[in-house]
Amino acid sequence: MKKYMLICLCALFVSMPLSEAEAVSNKPIHWGFAKSKEHRPPDAGKELTALLKKYDAFYLGNTKKKEIYFTFDNGYENGYTPKILDVLKKHQVPGTFFVTGHFVKDQPGLVKRMAEEGHIIGNHSYHHPDLTTKSTKEIKEELDRVNEAVYKITGKQDNLYLRPPRGVFSERVLKETKQLGYQTVFWSVAFVDWHIHHQKGKQYAYDQMMKQAHPGAIYLLHTVSRDNAEALDDAITALKKQGYSFKSLDDLMLDKVWHLPQL
Image (cartoon, rainbow, N blue to C red):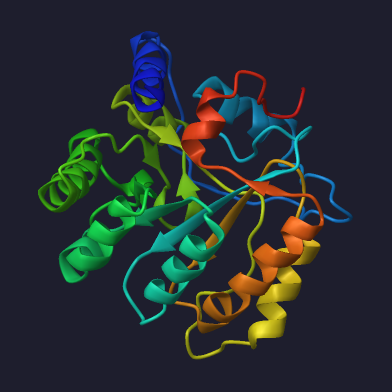
């Protein structure tokens, strides 16, 4: 029932036509914000917040609720995704895994496990390109190929969430991906965790996860990180002690009171 309601909600978003006469910019935007401190949500600024709101994209949940949403980017496998899945299963925490074509092709067993354990599989594009450099047709092909590959493994065709590769997007990309039926999901918590040869240790990852925590937080964690895999169990335990609970992006979409910061 929840998935049916969610699909109907997203269909409603898609059915709202955007003016074809409206000129939209393809100037690349690199997602960024001032990091959270003392459990206060970060601020992406009025102009960028307004742009996201225009196309139903988001980077925060309900900032009045102590809820956290874990999302993971999976460009390739580095041996740590199984441990991350083990931790999520132990704590009964849902996650969203944004996968590339390479990851799906290389790790069908992990993709199947994600689906079987109740996690959401999001779209991170097939080749991980800067979408602002791609034509409308190429963008659709990038996203369709991931959906088709995931469907062959899981039998699921409800891939509703998109994370633009490299955090690079434009108004044109937001508009065209919305028209394709996607909810673009950014993040409000992140740190440099993707350099596999420059990991800083479990404590660093734990400290970053804790000090940037805030109500409605959408975490971006890379599964190639040894530090993340080692710190996640302790971070979830500590966040629970602080009163945080963990929800999925589907829960967020169905929460009618969630919103971006007021303009």
